[in-house]
Length: 55
Length: 150
Image (cartoon, rainbow over all chains, first blue to last red; front, side, top):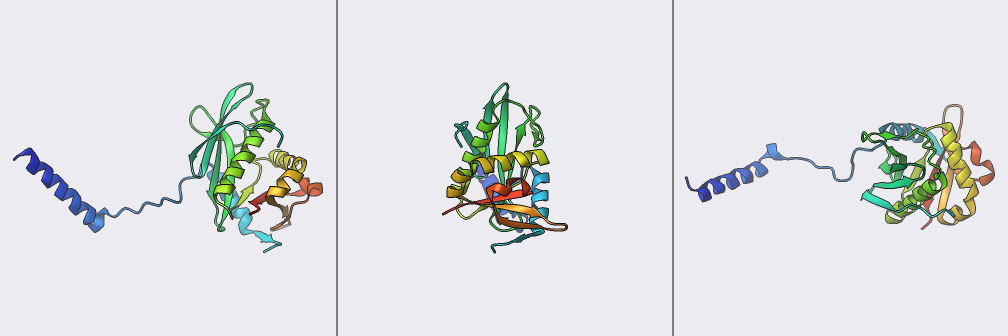
């Protein structure tokens, strides 16, 4: 099999994989892991129990 | 603040680093993380240790605390300018550290007050109340929220 033919088969497989439902990858670009998970957890706990006098 | 800040690097839109060059060379990381309440971000700040982990409780005693805090203020200014409308929540990792933040807010209140709306969280028996910050009560607050005035 020629190199060009092999390349075309690879491209075609890649395309088919990208179109397949199994290949769907959800990438969340807005949220990432925090460097301070414990502080974030504590902040959420505090704020969930906070009354805002001006809101 | 009167102390010139260190220059800093923005790792991405929510993470910054800078190097404290006091007695030792210490890499500091500042991280803004969105919280469960919309438009409120947690300000996390700590020392990047040689093994890649972070220490939020360490007292470096690097002899440059005011310059370090001035840099954190500058970074917060940068973040809130790029994301207007967000509010920043912060609390010390220890009671002593929260008192240090209160002392800075009190000391530079006139300057900060022109630029930020500052709130203090009061601790009640089983809840908290966020009220407008008053310099004379600086040491009674449990945590703080600041928002850039647009």
